[in-house]
Length: 290
Image (tube, rainbow, N blue to C red; front, side, top):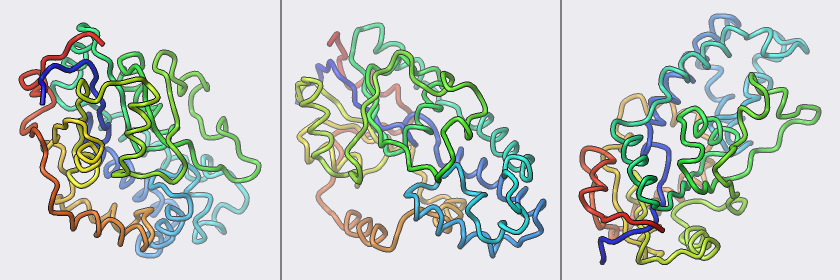
């Protein structure tokens, strides 16, 4: 393996920022306020939330409140943004507070950018949410390309503009080029990473892939033949608060079974481990101009 690299391909969630902390605080604040406004117990709402998330394949579904059966009577045809305005605001307040890059990420990416290294993001978070984060974290233009799934289908009669608090241009990427991954594709499917490499004309030996999940990110990179670095500092699955995410997850029983099969692999070993932070990449690799 060579430490000479011209391309960084990086995961986003729990690699560049703490997605679990962000999701937990934003979602919990919204859920508590929904309970306060509606009087409906959390124990009743949670299984309904899980059903909606599974139906749409995401734990960040924007029209969640409208589709919860327990809240239909309270809404009575009125928009959720009106009836549950305080819940929506609680979510947004916590999102602004907790959407921050891990220490050293911004400086490391800026250093790579100054060297002319190509920077590519690859995430399983849908475009609506990924774009907002990239813009908010001031990474639009830092990434040369970003690959992510297209958005979920909105209910009939609802447009993306109905969900936006800001003008449309606030959410669209101005400098980073966006590509959508194939519908239904999921890590650690190495075929997606292989397609990214081929589509962009990359040389595998000059690429390094960084991600927080051993069984998804690192396994995928290894299967694709790309040198990898495990963002160990981003591990979130052992935290007690992860329980709420499990309770309302968008994963179906089939996906849970798939996850268990993935975790059963014993042949996954990272090429390098980032113990403390993202900046350790600069100590391991000699990043140069693409």
